[in-house]
Structure formats: C-alpha cells, structure tokens
Length: 148
Image (tube, rainbow, N blue to C red; front, side, top):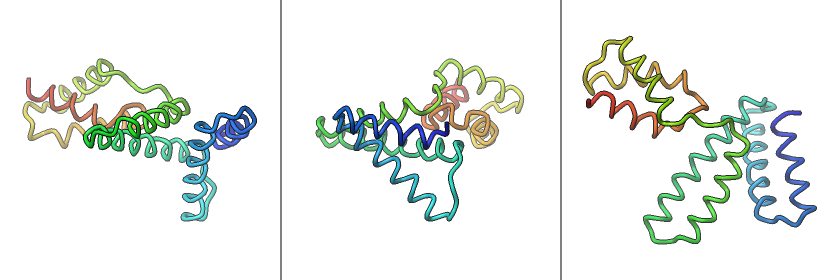
C-alpha cells in the first residue's frame, strides 16, 4: 500500500473514531498532496509524498518557534500535535551523534579545516542525509565540527 493510500485510510479511520484533530491534520496533508499533483499534473509516488511530508513538518517546526516567540503556547501545542502526527509517517530521523559521525568523515575526506569550507561539506553531506535528518540540526553539527 502506498503512503498516500495509508494517509487516506487513516483519515477515514479517524473520522469513524471521532478523532477530529487527526482527521483535520490528515485532511490538510492530503489536500497538500492533491494540490501538488494538480500543480505538476502528475501522480506523486511514495518518495514525492515523503518529501512533501518533510516540507510540511518543517513548516510546523517553524510555526512552533514563531508561536513560542510570540507567547502563544496554545497554538504552539496545536502545531506540535500536527508535527508529531506528520513525523509518524516519516522514516526515523537520525540523531545528533549519527550525523556527527557522517559529517566528521566528510570533513576528513575533504580536508576542510575552517568554516570557509562549510558549503563544500554541506553540499556533499545533505544528499547523503536527505529525508533522514533535519537540515537545521545538520547545519549546527557541521558548524560545531568546523569550529573545533
């Protein structure tokens, strides 16, 4: 079963069980998928759906930060609930230590010694970690490595 079909079935199950929060979030995700399909006049495969879910998760993380900064914990909590649901459909994200190990290998391989080479490192690292790690965390780890 494709990821899109799973989302649709889970939405139906949420409707039947009366879980309005899950139903609404899945509805938003399915609408985003449908919009992407209409815009590109194509049917999205699992990889494209996963990329779209990753994008949606990133938007939620940014919204959470904005709401917390604005002092609106209710909206931040709502966005956090949506983010948790979205992440349940994404593959397990790498931890800081795993990212650090891979980044250290690439830094050594490229022979980069200072922050000027960060673009080189990120250029080689991000394709390896695509969909498996948050870009912001990867950026922090590479900065940390290059500063030490």
